[in-house]
Structure formats: C-alpha cells, structure tokens
Image (cartoon, rainbow, N blue to C red; front, side, top):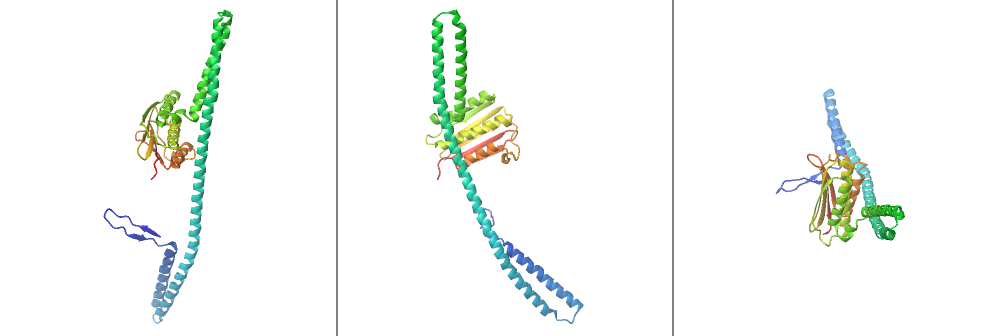
Length: 318
C-alpha cells in the first residue's frame, strides 16, 4: 500500500510506504519475542554465571526469526483472501449503487413524461371542454335576457352562479396542469417558467420573491432546464414549509458549460445534520436530479440566518 506524501509548491513528492497489517504483526512479534529471548538469557547469565547462554540466545533468535517469517506468510495468505473479498464487495456495492441510480433516473424520466402527458390532457381536453361549457352558459344567459321576462331572473342568476363555478373549476384545472408540467417551460423556456412559478408562489404564500434570471442559450437541453426548474420548485416548497422566511431570492444563470440556479431565503436556516436525515426526502430528490445531470447540489446555512440551495448543472460535456 502506497501513499503519496504531500509537499509544498516546488518540492518533490516522495512516496511514503505504509506497511501492510501482516508485516506490522510479524515485526511486532519478532521484536517482542526477540526481546524476551535476550532478556531471559540475561537473567540466566546473572543467576548462573558459568552457563553458556550465548548458544541458547542464538537458538532462540533463530526460532523467533523462523516463526515470524512463517507467521508473516500465514497472515499474508489470510489477508489476501480478506482483501479479495473486500474488493469484490466494493465492486458489487458500486454496481448495485449504479443500478439504483439508473433506476431512479429512469423512474424520474418516466414520471416527468407522465406529468407532461397529464398536464397536456388537462389543459387541452378538460380545459377546452370547460371553456366550451362556459360559452354555452353565456349563450343561454343571453337568450334568456332577450326575453325580457322578470320570471326568468332567478334562472339567469343560477346560470351566472354556474358560470362562476365553471370559471373557478377551469382556473383550478389550469393550476393543477401548471403544477404537473408548466406549459411555459416547453414553449417559452426556463426563465419565463420560473417567473410564472414565482408569481404563483407569491400568490399562494404571500412571501416576497425576487427573481434574477438571465436569458439562457437556445441550445440548453430540455432535461437540464427541467432539472433546474424542479430543483427550484422543490427548494421553494421547503421554504414555504420550514424556513419561516419573508423574502426569497431566486437566481438563474448560464455560461458556456453549465446552468446555475440558487434559492436564498432569510428564514431560520437549516439545522446541522438535517440535510442527511431520513426526513430530508426533498433534498435527496434535488441531489439525485443534479447528479443525474452530472452536476452538484449544495445546501448551506447563511450567516445571520437563512439558507442557500444552489445547483450547478453542466450542459456541455467535454
């Protein structure tokens, strides 16, 4: 096992040899047993001055040296099997982790496709049907008003109430469709989708939101734009649930190689250890999205309170 010794600028790097466990055990045995043989012979020399103890010392050291060599090779064989098993377990763990990562990515892609399909069906089919129903109610209302019959006023009032309910239902359908998959993300791009989402977030929560978004390059892949949008959306959900913030700043920018998004709030801040807790499923989902795109996600508390969630998503691979 070799480990490189770090050095300062301009200094040569010298390899530092780290002894293996079997070599350390054999060396410790050799030292301890050799000291025991030598010291025991010194005791014999003091108690029996006329005894030839040097021959016994040589025999004892020869035995210690031989057994230490045998011990080294026995331990080396045992440790080799343990190392091979550990390497196999590491490879198996890495393969399983990669399979789970690919499965999670595939599941997320399928879920996004299903969201897109449901959003379009709600927006196109159900939305158009409700719009047609509203037009029919208005046509009937207009025909009844032309009759100029006061007896029809209660019926006209009920038609107006029904029209208001249909309008509310149409607004709810549009909101659900936007939650599933914002139409602006596919038609107008990430910047406009973020602006619309932050407007809806402010209307729902009353939290002030400031958006700093620059125009993204036209060739940013849709998967990167979707990942950035979902990360910001999940971060805003965490702000509304846990932060107790009154202001949020959302930033989105892109350079020649990566899209960067960040969400900064002035709330209570994230507690240490929460990011890796069992309940931090939202943070785990954001991190998986970023890693699936080959990017990184960072969650850090701010001085004076608040939390910053930032993600870097590369969209041009070398």
